[in-house]
Amino acid sequence: MATSLFRQKYIEACQGIGVEPVGCIAKVEEMDDRLSVSSQTLAVKGSLALGTALKHGEFGEVELCNSYINDEGCKAVCEGLAGNQYLRVLNLSGNNFGANSAEWLANVVRLCPNLKSLSLEWDNMGVSSPQLTVLCDAIASSKSLTHVDLRNNRISPEGIPAICKLISFSTVLVSLDLRWNRLGPRAGDAILTALAKNKVMSSLKLTGNDIEYTALINIEDRVKSNEKSRVDYSASEEIFMKQKEYQEVMMQNAERLQAEVHRRDSHIMEGKQRIGELVSENEGLSAGQQRLKAELENARAEIELLSKGVSEKMAVLREESSEEIAALKSEHKTAVNELKQTIAALEKDLTTSRQTHTASETTNMTLTTKVTILEEQNTTLSTELASVKEKLSEVEFKASQDAILLKRVSDELAAKTEGCVIVQARKAELEEKVLEVERERNALAAQLQRIDLEHERNVQAVRDEMAREKREELDRMARQLREIHEELAGKERVVGELKAEMVKDVQRHQKEIDEMEERVKKGKEVYSILEVESHRMSSVILQLESEKKRLSHEIQLNADRYATLQQEFESSQRQYQADVDRLTERFATDRLD
Image 1 (tube, rainbow, N blue to C red):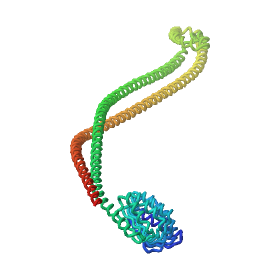
Image 2: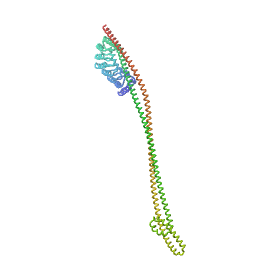
Image 3: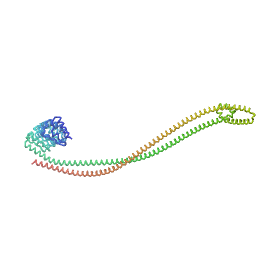
Image 4: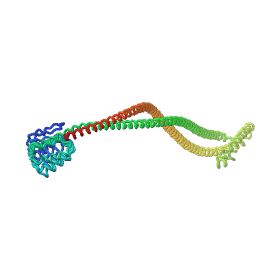
């Protein structure tokens, strides 16, 4: 990813500056840790583009040899490399650096903590004392730089103090190449004095600097001595480092084992806690299961009570409805019977009236023989009809007496022929009375007819009134029947609603029962899962406890091994001290010789 970003930034920088990209830079491979540009003319613009792109690169090795880079280009490249945590090797040989480039190179040395090799051969820096001092101080203070090549850079005698300071204070620099510079004869003694303080430098090349031969021999001997000491020191240091590394590994193993034991202890505690939680959850589920069973029983009891209550309500409603319907039917039947009786009574009264009228007509037919009695009753019959009706029986009695009297008179007329004139006169008188009675009878008949008409009108009015009352009564009864039917329909609707509500309640309670049963089923499943998990956690805890015992045993073995190694290390240290003392004595003997 960093290499592709480097290529992208390099091409963009070349396009922005107006320079042709170098093929080997633009085509660097994705996973390549090495950037090598040799014998390519970068000049100023190419160096600026490369420096811009290097800010986004993560190369471990950078070689820009013989690329005609001047001070300005060196500044751009160094700014791009500064802070690169991956840079190990930097080779800038064969360029046209000036004195100012030393400062930028010193900045790279300071800011690249993993730089081990720096090659500046044939860069013609001709560094003067200030710039060289900056570069040498940076090299001396580096904790990683072990190889430096400053050949053919025209370093003058003014740079000797800086070079000697570098040699005196460097603690990691192993190889320094200063060949073919211009240090002069005085550099030999100064460098030899500086080497007295340096115990690590094993390669110092000074050919071509006009230094005396004896000085070069002394310097070479000193470097060889450092190399030998370094080898011995390296061997002892290697032993010490191995022992230290082994101790660190042992400590790390002990810490790791302790951490593993602690982690497993924590896992065991977590497992126990989890088991406790599962047990409590199991108890809670058991309690919840019992509670659900109790709720289920209560729900069933409530459903039974509701069903019983609904059945009782339905029975009561049916009974009340049956009683009310029977009462209404009885009232209706009674009212109909009363109407029928009333109609029968009216019809009976009408029949009686008609019979009375017929009897009156029959009585009028017999009045021809009752002239005398009718004469006495004429005024009474003309005033009121009621007295006529009451005296009809008397009239009939008198008529019968008159008939007897007439028969008697006829008998007397038949017996007494001689009394014809008197009889005739009496007969005329009687006929005259009969005519008068006939007139009276006609008046009575008219009066009776008028009474009969009035009676008919009264009977018709009574009939109309009775029919109207009957109709009103029937309408009232019909309204009552409609009200009863409506009330019955309302009660039936209420009963239907109660039935529907009861069905809904039954369905809801059945659904709740099903849900409770489902919850009980799930609780049982969870309980079985928890039982399985509890058994599994118990087995895990047993495994962890056995692992803890095994780790404790390993820790004890490692501790014993560490004690043994400690004893071996102390023995090796004593042997090393004896070897050092022996070498010191031999070195002192060699010097005396």
